[in-house]
Image (cartoon, rainbow, N blue to C red; front, side, top):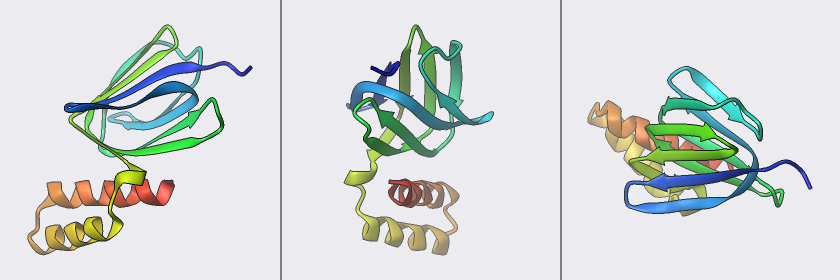
Length: 124
């Protein structure tokens, strides 16, 4: 059995995903970070972007995370964000329309959220 870490991906309104993983890749304010079992303890601020989780079962879970925090200690990784959307839950056509609307309205925040959704789907 490969080394594992326990992952909790949590949004403000729900627990999005929980399970065992061999690798998690996320974007922080310091850049992209990969966390594997045995990683040094860390506490950081998440940037909006896709989070990729490689599960112990060999599957890949991708989520669009819109800001938040990442914490790792004792092989337990917590990703806490205000908004988290699993790539499988994202309606691509709706996200594309939201991106077009945000660009037309010059709404940088909405444009960033729509872009993250589309990147999460493309990463999946």
